[in-house]
Image 1 (tube, rainbow, N blue to C red):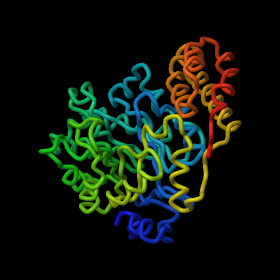
Image 2: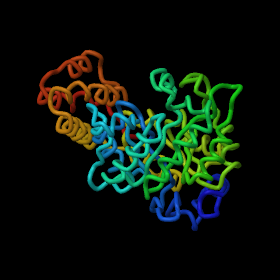
Image 3: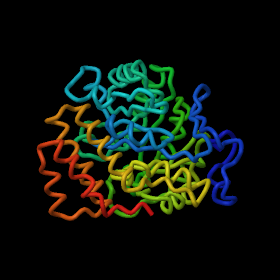
Length: 353
């Protein structure tokens, strides 16, 4: 179920069309409908050091069902530690924006959720899936898969602290011997979680090995709230296969969007029309990158912005197969004007077809 009484996955794959009743919205709570127009729900995954405000704003401009902030440590956010509140900043005009929080203490999780809601977040997402050692060693992220009682205490604290819907992002389990995502999902739904995203790997897999989208279907069967499939979705082909195997209500795209901020919109539209093309042409591509670059510099300031922009420029140049020598020149440049002047040449090999 999950989507207004319809199985969107089955309808899309068997008929090739979006069901009328769920074509326009994904219900994530009694009081919030995420409107997708005539498109299919494709969400932007939270990614550390990537899904900052400039990138979320860009992806949302093309069209995304939901854009989620980088994971933010709840205690750091409340105490105003350097960089934490900047991660939660929401771009004006982004209708469907979420802030993702991580932590192990109910007090800080609840307070951070209240702050995010007050600053305009339309949804609070709880991270129980991050596999990073520094997060897990602090008994946060996917470490909570080993202690579902404590995980539920955190969920209850956040749900009771805010009026906006609360979602959960997690993994299949801790390792191959502990696949307990379905148990967590059932209990989370009972506590008021409105939507759950499952990365199709265990914590101990990190990002290695083959993603198991089919295992997500067990979570789908266990709950009535929307279930979103995540992991290794990089284009329409993988999106369709993830949806088929998971039987989910939507998909979440992560690193596949790096260098391709239009990807979510492209995938969404192709679920309705295989001939849809959302890929920018050469001149538009240059303009998009230039605007993203300038937005990064404005948000972070020149010195920090120059450093942080390099990874995005690198991804854009990967997509365009920019020659190595020119690539190195651009990434080492200390002058924004020099970078901007070099972009048309760097992207002249871009083929939007």
